[in-house]
Amino acid sequence: SSAGVSRSLKNIFDGDPTTGALDGVLEDCIVGGLFGGLIGGGPYAIRTRVVNKAINAALRSGDPDRLLEGQVANWLRNDIVAFQKKVGPNGSIGEVDIETSRVIIEVTRAPSRKLPQVQKLLSNTDLNPLGKPVILFAPNYGKYATGDIESMGGYVARTEQELRMVLQAVGGP
Image 1: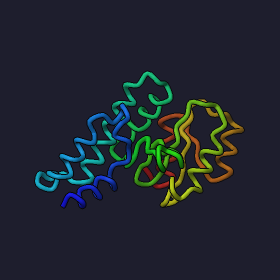
Image 2: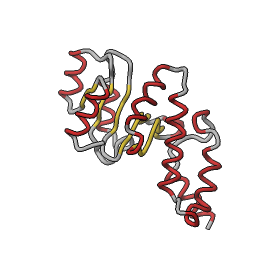
Image 3: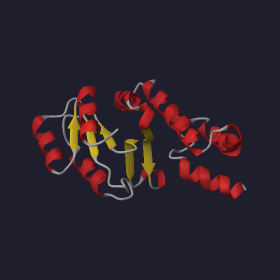
């Protein structure tokens, strides 16, 4: 039924169809939702297509912060379940940069001042309903700022190799 398709789209569509990163994705979801069962697609295939389009758009971005998010997501592309996911109306509750099946990754180029964001990701059940570990990927993050994140239960990685080591330690990706 069309109500069932609408519910399915609502459950699988994590983005705003009006944003440039997701242009054309709503149409893909509708077609995939209506015909996915007939051709072997379905909700997982649609989510993967939405996430892949958003990652590709970030990799082409002129915004260095968005580009870094895209690069990190690209390393983990096969396990990403959400990318740049806004939570709440227009992202009023917050945004999850990258979510895999086992962790949430906050990405920044900043050298410090991400403690409040990591605390929010660790404690807010709207942003992290399953209580997944939170990793801050921050190539420029300072030693003292890193200690603050780690003391509250978060993890910090500065390189792809460090990120992979942390993911392995927490049972990720």
